[in-house]
Length: 404
Image 1: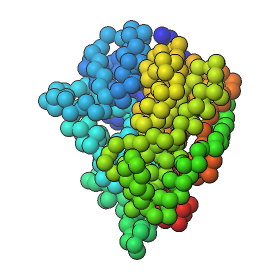
Image 2: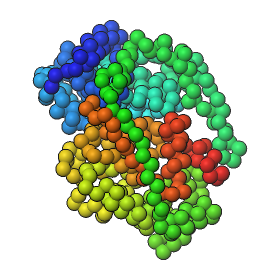
Image 3: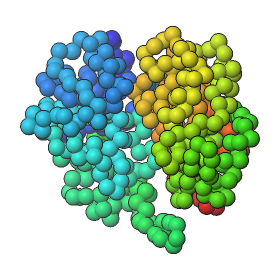
Image 4: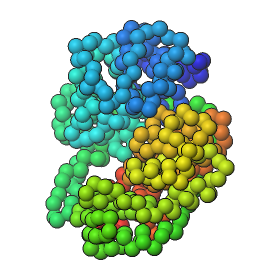
């Protein structure tokens, strides 16, 4: 593997930043080569830990081997960090998809585990570091004791300076503090000395990704179930009970129902409409496609219709590949596919952006990404919020759409 010019340049600049400030944040868009750049910076260290998600481990180890570097590298997924010995001294920790530890106002479990590890140098990697709010930056950098915000002992104290706090109104007259509006004019100057940004356009991407909305008419029973649930908040059928007595439950149940399935109160799942799976198979006959789904039941529906022609192995170049959006939206390339198809849409803007970018590649001029939505369903409402508003389709957005 030979580094591209921008990777050579960014690895040299990044190393200088890292050695001077003990942390470096590489905010580079997907497919721009963040992994190889970080692995190259790490050459000056001996004992390196790379924290990523499980499905990306294989490609990272492959890149390391192709680059021919000889330092000790351990690659581990976020969910396995508890297995690490906290007494081990790491020379460098690379935190891949660092936005995963950016939840606020309270720190997530993964961040707490990283902070337990013994290390003085950190590299943070993300193509979407603050996709939904600049308030996401605090806990990411707080993984290092050398954070520019280290003087603030917790998020709330940091927010007193760096966030425009607001009041949000919840159901039943309740309120809560809204910390999502980070003060960009204060945050950027505070972190610019440790950041390098890199866009796809800068590295030569000429490809354009177009969203294509495919609307399907679901079976009558699907609409009857959805309408009855909206009206009564409960549906009792032969398979069991569907209950949606809160806004959050109603939102999730509708996301399931309009895709032909639903989890019941006894935790079992009922499947009643295969329209989407059958439509996808027929519409993309003769093509190799990547299929993104949201709920596990949707994988079973896809498998039932496609049979041996579909796999969950993203390295299989001969079959259609299906994967849960939250599992393969990061660290996986599907650019060898003829098309990317969303069986359902996730309520997160990050999931939307990263998942569709799996089709991006330097050599491809144009790609179409397809979204299969039920006619009159909740999907188009979610799509508008995560694409146009570039926000999460939360309970507030749901209540505006359904007056629930």
